[in-house]
Image 1 (spheres, helix red, strand yellow):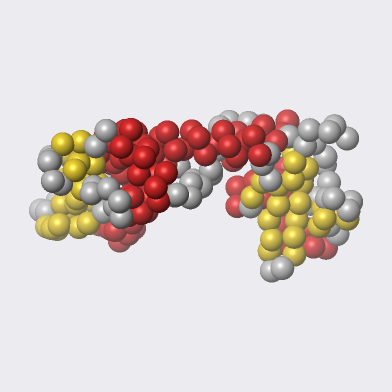
Image 2: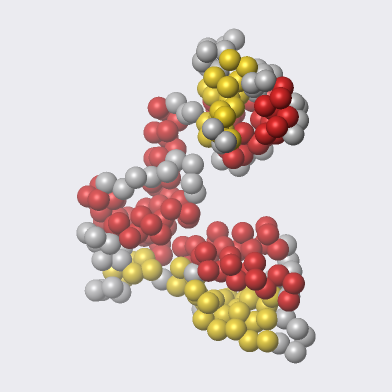
Length: 229
């Protein structure tokens, strides 16, 4: 077996399932890049403990994955499980995420005392002061709101907000509302003559791009959106 490999694993009902993968390709896949699962797999076996060479039984695979197909099993492990990454990979990912988080805060937050945007150098200093923990796998957008709360202990910050009107068909009103609540606030709603619901929502500007991507991914173009301000 090649020396450069790592393990991806998932635990289901206390049972651990592991596959052996190429670390760089597996990381790219985990981060959403298009990578062939067949290419990233370095073994066609599923283990309960790869280090000890303990293979998962057919009965366990069928019970928890409903298949013995290694590609289907690997897909689930990579999507819902975790991969062991090298120290260098972790360092690189955290550096990239940190840079993106600083850029988001600097672009979308103001100092409430002066009303001007906060320079990236000052944001960097604040991150060092509060010693924030950055998740190498979560997107910058998904973790920046929590990091802002930590930074506000040492640096006054106020998020800028964007307001949208969403025109929502009746069949998807509840899931759209749920998505809105996970990103921002509902300001008003109004029933329209054509049966759709008009939702006026406020979102942190730094989450606007992420929200719209999610909205379009989950509901295609069934929801019409208009930027108000």
